[in-house]
Image 1: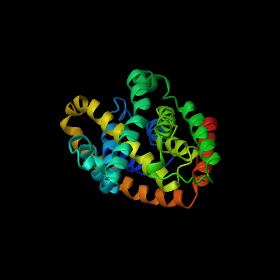
Image 2: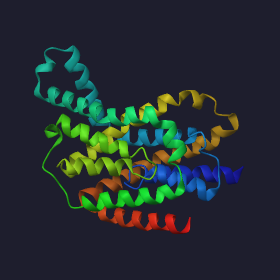
Image 3: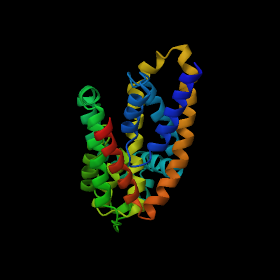
Image 4: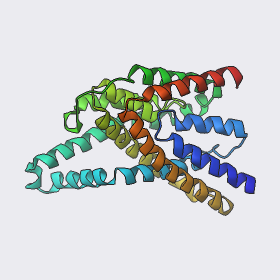
Amino acid sequence: MIIEIFKYLIFGLLQGFTEPLPISSSGHLVLARYLFNTNAFDDLTFEIVLNFASFLAIFFIFRKDIIKLIKSFFQFIFDKEKRKVKEVQEDFKYDLLIIIGSIPAGIVGFLFKDFIEEKLGNVKILGVAFIITAVLLFLVRKLNGSKKDKDITYTDALIIGLFQVAALMPGISRSGAVLVGCLLMKLSRDSALKYAFMLYLPVSIGSFVLSIKDLMSISTSAIIPYVIGFIASGVMTYFASLWFFDKVKKGELAKFSVYLVILGLVVLIFI
């Protein structure tokens, strides 16, 4: 029992550390499941729990922006006077940008969820996906556009959303792919970071809502390990996110690229 709890703790820490980084948390979890020879993620329920913990951590980091965006959304719809305020208009547009950017991954994920889980979870595929992510990060390592939040267009949002679709494949980092899309659309690093993580929130909420039925069936004996993994994931995500934001602002994406190339080659050659 202690060994099993330790595994859940390790998985929680691994999820929490890799979720905000452009190195694919899902890919690392699949790899960890293979190395640990455990069935803990066969139904993806525990992974959803860990992801929700990461969601709460990221929500906390951006809580002021999120609350402001939600407030402006309802003000624009229901308050005719507030609708005329420029700041409310800009926030409402940003809300729409989040919705538009989330649609492609939502549609593809809903239609091909089973196929992705069954056919693309192979460890060897992970090696290729890690290297693809590394190449993408290397290509945009020096980019730092001039577009701020208010300058993002609906076309930008749709294109960035298509980059997020690629991240449905295990091993392709969601934060990495979206960040690449943002930088290619000439967003500044600050705006790219914010938009990349704002797009994470709807995906996380959707996954959690769709898995509520499965979560209700968790056995009593699994509650303690799940709680341990949940706490570990949330705390680690918070600190890893702050560390990652600093690295991106300093233009140090190449370091993650090097790591992914090494990891991808190790997977392809030795596993």
